Image (cartoon, rainbow, N blue to C red):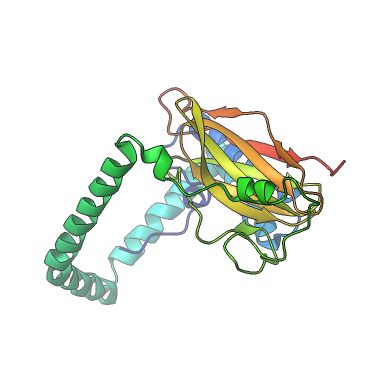
Length: 264
């Protein structure tokens, strides 16, 4: 049965969520979509309005009770539709026909994931990781007058907006934490580095224009820092490290807001 659009869905919590879970979800989404962190994203304002409305209803016992009753009525109405029932039956038949195909593809993907895991876990895996794009720019300018590179390290033109650099890893996608980054300095090439034992390994590489904004999603537990170079001056800097740890037994991870300072 098609899902009923509800305030629970807008707040990304279950319909049995406790008051504390509702508050935590509201705080998490506010950090992600607040207009102050998204000055160039008009969609963030629309999402934040939905989140505010959802929290206003679900945090009030009487309004939540009426909303639950409305959800139940909507589901009863949908269940009573003969046309919908025929559509559901047809969908089930299609799913049965596709079951073995999906199973075969799933097994193949599982084997590929196991192979990738074995490669990452094997000794020397860190040495096989792609080179640091920032380090390449720093090294290319050492010993001679620095010149701003005309192209990104992958040979393509620099992106017009904040974006990942193709050809470099987009890893550490095993969690629910986000990092919102604001660039108050010059155009910069930035790397997100994650600590692996005693070493730091590049897990994301992206470009940020002056006054740009970028958000890193799905970060898992670990120790992180940003390593970046000012493209105009060639000066390279790294931020203080920050940890991401799962909070108690909850599936909630803390979010981070980072501001890259103005160019000296």
